[in-house]
Figure 1 (cartoon, rainbow, N blue to C red):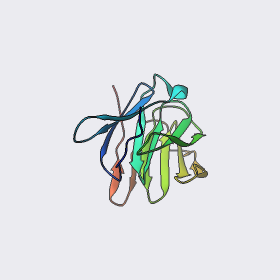
Figure 2 (figure 1 turned 180 degrees about the vertical axis):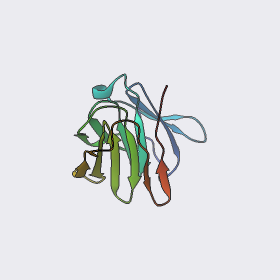
Figure 3 (figure 1 turned 90 degrees about the horizontal axis):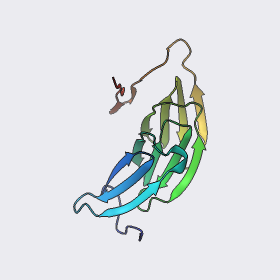
Figure 4 (figure 1 turned 90 degrees about the vertical axis):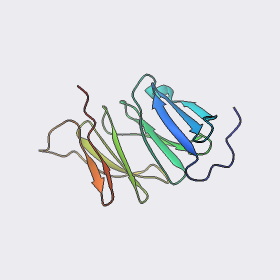
Length: 141
């Protein structure tokens, strides 16, 4: 598949499903790119998008940073925990909560800036927030 050209900020619609991420042109529905994330195949995918990057993770530890326009892998790191992930992207930082641990990663390099095991908070779905942005708990039942 040829790289998608002309993508600047908001031209693509993304869907993550079963260990795969697909980018579609929002106006035409044309497939811009597909990526199979083999190390999280079959898992539900959590996504965050910003700054020319797509962040994707499943219920396993790997966290992927893809190029928004092409889907090419920029970096990959392991998170501290497994389980359904909540992601919040804000001002150069990606916050990931899963399995009772909140972590902060730098978007440029994927380096873990800090982690908090949230001792005394319990374990389960969480909501993440910064001023002007909220990611609410995802509860299935």
